[in-house]
Image 1: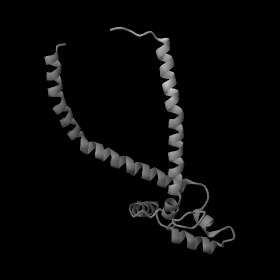
Image 2: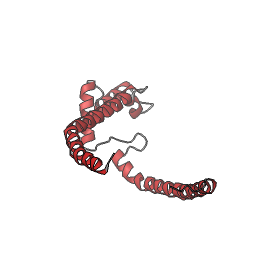
Image 3: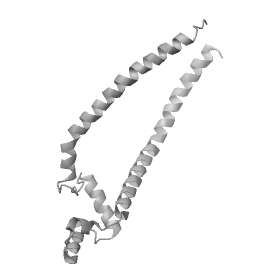
Image 4: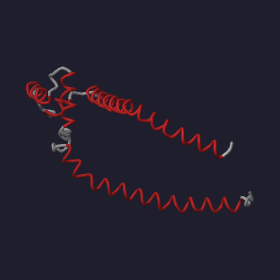
Length: 153
């Protein structure tokens, strides 16, 4: 293949590829939106399929049936599943992630409190893995270079 033919191919292919990407962009956005909705729906349904009654858990072990029913109403568990899903989506949109089961604090506050420690741990792990991986990679490359004779082209 000669150089002129390669340049001609590149010149004609690049705008064509750009046009294809632009044509597919709305589809890609739609796919991302449907994927996000599917993940949200699956997460919602899995949390509803867990064994046990969330209202009984929130009410406590010594709660009466009336207290459990009040908690169920407060949590919106007495409403149809589609209404609960709509409220779930609305809460997610407003960054209302609910209340922590262990501390009773808002989940977003809990995340904000724990994020610095998590980020620090992640950064330390990344630095440690790079401190191990880079020297080992260099060592492997040096050993390979010693084993293989240089090839002249």
